[in-house]
Amino acid sequence: MVVAKINVSASSSLKPETWKFSDLLADPAVRARWEKVRRYFYLRESTYDMSNRCNLRCDGCYYYEGDKQFAAENRDPDAWRALMRGERARGITYAVLAGAEPALAPDLLRACFAEMPLGCIATNGATFIPGDIGYKIHISVWGNDRTSEKLRGARNLLSRQLANYENDPRAVFIYTFTHGNCQEARETVEAIAARGGRVSFNVFSPTVGYEGPLRHTPESLREVRSAMLELLQEFPQHVLYSKYNAVAHTSPQGLHELFACPYPRVNPSTDIGLGRSFRQYRTDLTWDRDSACCVPDTDCRECRHYAAGSAIVTSRLVRHAKDPDAFKAWLDYVDIYLATWVIGYEKGDNLQPQIVFPPGRKAGGNGRE
Amino acid sequence: MNLEAIQTKVAEVIISELKLEGVTPDTFDRELDLIDELGIDSMDMATIVLILQDEFGISINEDDYPGLSNIRLIAEYIRARKEKGAGTS
Image (cartoon, rainbow over the protein chains, first blue to last red):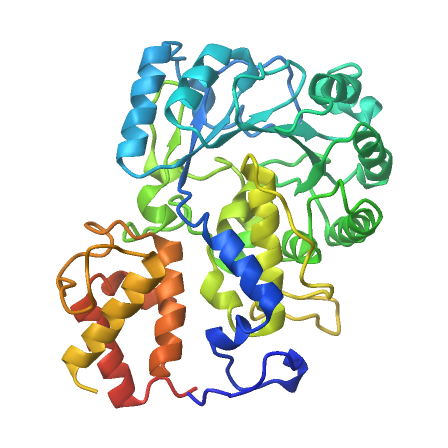
């Protein structure tokens, strides 16, 4: 290997054969961001279904697919406290509390928070989660009120979500782009911004065998990317996203093909990382390695889910530490991941103003990446 | 650079990057399992790999990480890569 000795203040367009990591860190802004995000490298997640009940029924729901929906509920807070103590003992430092609707089990959320101080709750936002539960709260938004009623059977859902979580520092609204709701994104983001809220983006990722109308096409992915980039530009104080997020989640290839997903469901290695430590617990407190990932029953070939990316892309540090452009894009992604998932973490300005493609990919003449 | 010198340098990098206390490059147990006993995770490993690549002018494949579970094994890997010139891209 020929290690190039190039002043990092020079543009990466100089194309040295290989960049040293120390060269990448020679840029003070990059160094500062690296030092900021690396303090959180100790985060190790697992996910937990809190209930088998939900107050909505949404088209394309992850929970009501596969076997996990049939698990019996364990409603004993002491059992959940014991589980979290055990999780801490095996090195887990971050709890993602999800299906079916965690807001219906506040005592269990409280029990988890007492034992595991960092975490996030994925909720539909229709029911307020008491303020003493100090986790991040991700509120799923699938469009305007008309679309929410159509897809989720809930009236005035966005209005209720906004009312429940106005000025709540725990809250991040997660707008899921489906095949049919791209045109509603602007009005929805405007409504969230008008109430002082913050929003990040998800891309609908079908469960195995899903054949419904929400599934993306190459055309809809291109449309989604354009919408994401426009909203990012127009609402920088309210949209937690970067250009690299937009590219990574709207590429023709899914996250697994782009970055090699490390979750146990597709990663047989138990040596280090998520393949070793990650578990996805059902509401009866059992787990199964063969189905362990952050969005079980998703079709891995088409997974572009924001939660999956938060682990998959962030874990690929070495692949992105190849040149200044890729490394800045990765730092933006990690910064947004932390701002979205960690209470008290404040996002900085994005470092990478350009469109950067994932390692090994580039825009082709036919639009393929 | 002989194996002991490489081991000492690797220990120095790990101590520095993980901010370990109560251990020096000379006293760091070369057989200590970094994952099972020290508790390092994939992001720690990635960071250490990047520093070692800089230090020794080699590249370390992602697929090889699981085999780099203690300082002796890392040092032997680095020595082998340097001898083969495997870092040359």
